Length: 527
Ligand code: C2O
Ligand code: CU
Ligand code: CU
Image (cartoon, rainbow, N blue to C red; front, side, top):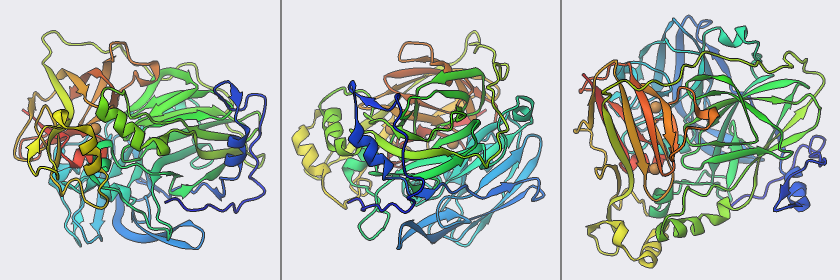
């Protein structure tokens, strides 16, 4: 059940309904605009910035629980890093070695994975780096990669989805001086703004409710309330100029399909692991769980504008099960949902007004002759221990109505019921190495999804997309990436440059975190 939201901020509440206002199915949806104008009620919080150099390259992070006021006068319990919910933005400099002092003050085992940092597997923070309650973990991270926006989040075996849902996530900014050279906006929180977008469910008394029913495991846990930097319906004040937004989809499962309500352009300058060759103009930007994009947005017209997200269709409707899933989550996903609003103000000085025409050198991906090729099927339906029969059976052959009955069972953990997903038919197994790759090699990996789109992510390596559903990747996904939304199939050229021996292999998995916890994860070691 969603809370009734109250508007606190009256003065900043009007959304400008200009000639270019949102048009749905050919007609302006004025009731929609009225609705969103009442939705935004709080200023966008900017996470605390920890500059590693200022801290002598020792960065303290405490995984802890705490209370947040997501809604007026209601206290919500959650987790955060040195905060009650979410965590700081940590700025790291290329060439430095940074020691993270991670303390686990939770009563559960956790880990901290550096998603998008390229470090040896012994420091990667995957399931092998568990930190017991009360313990400290101190990985020394050698930062040697181009400027990019990465992030950190827990990765304990089987409990990743819930811990992230409770709030454990933060951003990592890798800096190498290129943003200065390119004249990009750089003023943290003013014209260089982090946006961690998530969806959550809250109970009437304000508790974060985590849905881990079998149905939620199947389509991933989704919420009816969108929050940005840990608040609902925020307003960001921005200069009347160019603003750089660093977007992270920190949701467990939902794809955000972002648009501005006046369809203004988003100039994509970076994807996961760094800048693109040139800015790419789009009007709609899909951001899958785990993905990051940086965009430049021009606010020089001084108009307030709302950021919205389109319905998320879960990917291709392929058969009865997908249709049924789409029906069940329809209420959450059929409407345009407001994300936040931007209000240009004159008292923030304008620093940048132009978009650079060229960014970085990005040579076309070159597939080595005789490159090793592997293929992986992200398999939603591997083996399910169903409550109806108690037997392990393939869901492909199941009667859909029987399934949905079972799937609706509330408060029964899909994982506890033995739901398993897998890759190439095998659920995750820490004792099995699924691929041995040669350190320094580039390999072609072919990825296929089943039932719905799956965001594929690999640790300790990054890739270039060669092919997405039979076509070249869209220009805004043509850079170095670590996460790709696989609809039908994808082909990626992966560079394996970080050592990960068999004792602590690297992970690759679906970034729908419920899928990951249910076994849609595998491991590779380098030799
Ligand atoms: Cu962002 Cu293995 O995860
Ligand atoms: Cu990762
Ligand atoms: Cu998946």
